[in-house]
Amino acid sequence: MPLRILHVVNNLGQGGLENGLVNLIGQMDPRRFEHVVCAVRGLGPNADRLPRDRVTIENLADSRWNSRVQTPALVRAIRRFRPDIVHTRNWAGVEGVLAARLAMVGGVVHSEHGFDGGAASVEPRRRIWVRRIAYGLADRVLTVSFQLRHQLSARMAFPEDRITVVHNGVDRQRFYPDAALRAQARYRLGLQDGNVCIGCVANLLPVKDHMTLLQACAGLPPDDRRRVRLVCIGEGPERDRLQGFVQSRAELRERVHFLGSRPDIDDLLRAMDVFVLPSVSEGLSNALLEAMASGLPVLATAVGGNLEAVIDGDSGLLFPVGDADALGEHLHGLASDPQRRERIGSRALQRVREEFSMETMVSGYEQLYLGLVRPAAAPAFSA
Image: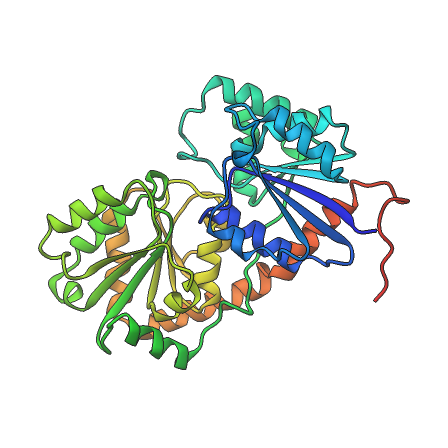
């Protein structure tokens, strides 16, 4: 019998965590693992990407026990599905650790994929206590980057050597350079041969700091501004503020486009010439890895997992958080030098292939799960 993993997440919306979970489930060996996804606060578009023939989705927001505190509902769901392992993610899923212990599950994993605010933001004392208790109750605590592991250990006063790191991986069957597909995607976006397309794929949240990117574009020299087009892909509460800034600047009005949430991220990345991730804080961005796998030169803030994905000056360029001038200088250098864009993009593609493959990520999770079950319970497998 395959091992049954019950995953606890806030929802299945358009976020990097949710995208990563769907990618993981889709790539894991169905002969050895089956999955239940328990969404605490509702579903979302990523629910449609899960293979329903081998994944059960439990939406607690639709249940008659829906409550601000979902621990009792999680206990009931865990007892009903009887998983071998419960894997909870981020603050929204942390109460699943207690629920798993109350339901006496054999293996419990809790993972953190990034901070809601910046790494230097102040965490409410109650959250620190709850997280620390949950980490102690879990069999394994996991992060997606070494930088995030170090920050969590310091913030939660939890031993760093008790936190495992499994880097995110990128699906290179979907994200790859292709000249013909690039031409089609640029045509659909209305891009001309002389346009330099700068792109950002990130939900419109304060932690993603799109404003620094807009300010950097506004400060470009006139020749750059004439050829640059900026596309922002994602949705969120910052949209009105960001669009208001664009409308207030004549140099941006016709050159910045908010495309909202899109399912065709792979094609949109191929249309770009430069990718920017201006986040205040990051675990390890799937969007950044996908851009690198698409052969793009990437500009990213020197925070979190960005420091592990990007070798500054080689596979991308790093800049300080909130520094629109430094970002603008990088954009100017790349906008005016197509050979440099190609060189850095090639190095980014090579780095993803060598260090951040989907196969490596999936193997890391499979070994983690198998290591939590008794040898007799681990499913036998032969090729």
